[in-house]
Image (cartoon, rainbow, N blue to C red; front, top):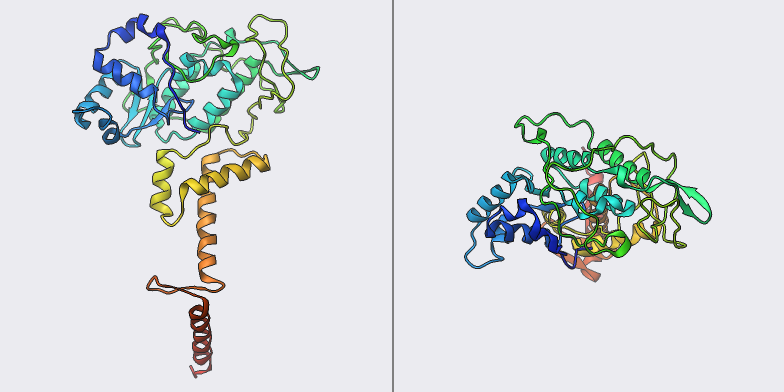
Length: 358
């Protein structure tokens, strides 16, 4: 589901790095974080022409220069080859990393990234997540102990690393630089735990907590771990509401279809180019409804969506070629009596050919 709003924290106007930008760069950054198709990983399709139409007099060339300035200031990472843009510190400063369920959606969104450069940048941001600030006590669900919030978040990070595989060093050298913490407060559309609109105090440039992304052990099974009533940092245990279950990412990468799975621009272009006879909006809604009802888990839901489109196209072709509908090579469709006559004529022609001597 597309975002309905982009929440801007007032503390961004106290951030030194953000204030160092000029007004056009600031406006563009606020524009980017308020896009409806921005996912939990901070990923956007790089659509210069469409964005240039959002302000009178703005051109694609000027927009490209502004984006390059934001990239130089390490607010974003771009890949023009794959037409992707990553808001670098979105996961960390948005508070996504504090909520296991939202982290699961982040992993799903991150699997949409095609660019190796962007994948490296996102993994480097995962190294900067201060996992030691998360509650490490077992969660409570119906009187039983479940994995801690810290273990769940660490499992999501490890699942992401496993999904991205072995990323070789960036030949350009861009991917090897330690990511910046800018801006220290990232505007958000995701409510923070505990209902605090301002969220946790974020780290400014160069002062992020040390990473402990690999230290917590993975839970052996996807034990349900409901969302806590309170943020729970420093609490002895986390009591949960019944049925408020947060699914832990399994070590094998399998997970349920994300709550925010939706048809984005990249998927729409793929559908239009590959299966122009299909309605992508209808097919996506059917796909989501079917798999949510099934409750099954998959490793890559976007690959499953592409397979769904292929199967739908195949079934549509089979329906056109059977029953009282005949699709002629010219593209003309015959139905009813005309289709029956054409069918019998085709059978008669086949019998004649089989009866002729070789």
